[in-house]
Length: 206
Ligand SMILES: [Zn+2]
Image (cartoon, rainbow, N blue to C red; front, side):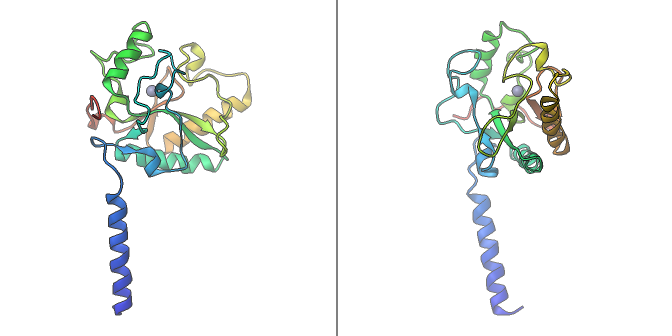
């Protein structure tokens, strides 16, 4: 190997190493924005625009996921771009305290909110994500309901009369499916890493 080649190889190795080291670790999770800056983040539980009408997360909390889950999400992000969209995140990692507040606000309805005492949410393990589609400028795509609408229209099996809404859901579901996520029958926006069983809960990031 020529000295210049050796030098370039060495410099590349150092660069790659420093890149992976610069990803901040949050109790075994990573910030989605650091993995894929093109993903839009709108954590609803940081705002009053959620079912509790109160912010449940600190104002500076990033959208966090397990590294392998975030990698899968970055793949889904790449796929939806082919249809002219980007991903928009409504929720990712959820501390246990927030899960308890949601459980209480939902009227303790296990169909829509996981019982934090008996069946902890997979959001609290950093392997579940709530998301929708948006246009590159951030305008939300037309979907069948808003986030956290607890009705039969929230089901991914609901046949919306508007074909554009049905198409958007199909684009989202296909991208997530092809990237290794599972969906649930009650909430079209909720997906979980297919390897979720490997992980346990992280009560808080403090
Ligand atoms: Zn969810």
